[in-house]
Length: 120
Image (cartoon, rainbow, N blue to C red; front, side, top):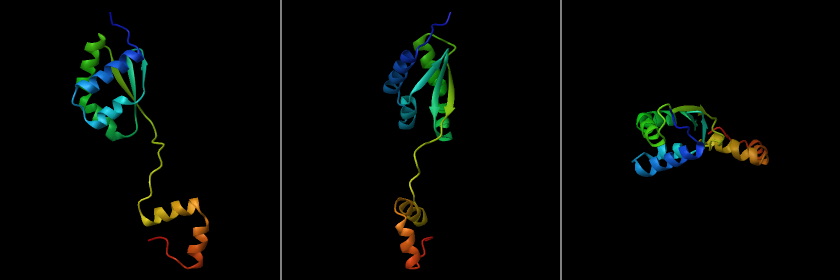
């Protein structure tokens, strides 16, 4: 018989795993994100494919640890990819100008009035 798992119990063991193991900073950040527990499935929210690859590198060890600590051999991970809501910072001169013009449309008028090339 499998011991039922709770969200609090899983969170506690994940935090314990983070402090005991020499996990990379990326893995620590991913495992520190909010989780959902549905039956024996632990749902991790992932923002990109790099995070999936990082978790997959430690998944076997992590599942073994959780299954042992929580006394439930049917524990598995389920990944939910979420869209990154953080707006990307402008890097090129054109992107910077567009971002500034979005905040202050008068820049477009000035650029046009003085014949400035805003693409470079």
